[in-house]
Image: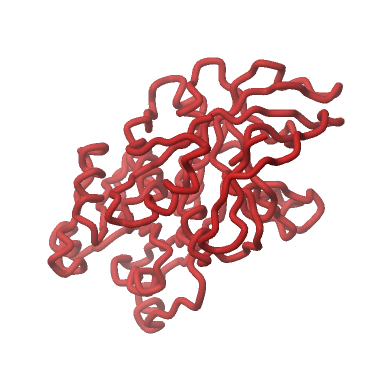
Length: 338
């Protein structure tokens, strides 16, 4: 069975992996059809991904087909198309007991802490499969990225007519923009890359993109009459950006860090205190985010397929993933097919 494994930073190789066994109780054997490439995969390739160990089979944004199920599995059947919720939780820690399975103390994310979907087939807990009778494998592979943004907007408690600043116009930023717009918010986007801002504006014409050549705070203040933002979501995973993001938060506003970076974030405490900000983290997503997103996609409320700018096959990934990790490649979303 073909699989792509990251043996160590910078060493991604195609190899012959053993076939998975039959699914047991509560499990499903799945065939991978699409793999969405994520910032996590690129950071892991370059050795910059926290909570990571090598060697690892990457791949957690998946559009899959069910090949077999355990005797007690009823919500999915052989032949179903599904999206995979890749967060394996323990069910007993404080977070799990409170229903916050996305930040389980013992979490194992498929493709990060456990081997993922850059292979032809493997066995997963069937409860982590979210089926759709309408969506394509491409669409199903994008659900997890969308779920990250949906959860971040939930954390930010965005309301209609509020001003939301999204920092970073990559896939997580795009997913955040999508759900802020669905809430009826006014969305302003910050990014240093003109190509990303242009792509973002093509995808979401309602957004306002700030000029990366001019001071962001001054532009934001002018646009909002000095009020700044009700909510700011930093999706960059860049420590300098995360520290500076407080400058865009208006009085009693909320700041959400959905991007993840190694190291310490520092910011001006008097500014934080003076404006009585609320600072939140946003990690992974919840099961309901997956089911709600699939429903919205089936209804036509969300259509992220235009995000996909680059494609390859599983066998091409050892060459393509390093190429696409270069910002000069102008990748919005890359998807591998099997």
